[in-house]
Image (tube, rainbow, N blue to C red):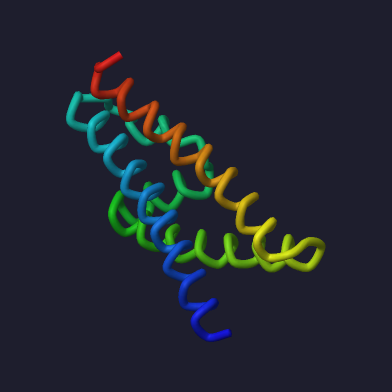
Length: 113
């Protein structure tokens, strides 16, 4: 059981790291391109609020911790109505869509497409 929890924590941390680092990269590119309101590109209002108050790095770190909590609660809630492998696949699919969207925006912001 302990290995499962640690493994799950590592998987969640990897997903969150990918998401948050892509978000920071996107916003940094927009800032470096001279966009005065580069934080307006952030669609999540809670993350945007944290970025405005704590800066890009500080807001990202705080929001990463919040995301770990909400992701864990979502997994626990899904696990209560289905088996844990199905719950994990749903988390992978949803978070994969988020990471895919961030990657698309990064490619777009880098003007590769």
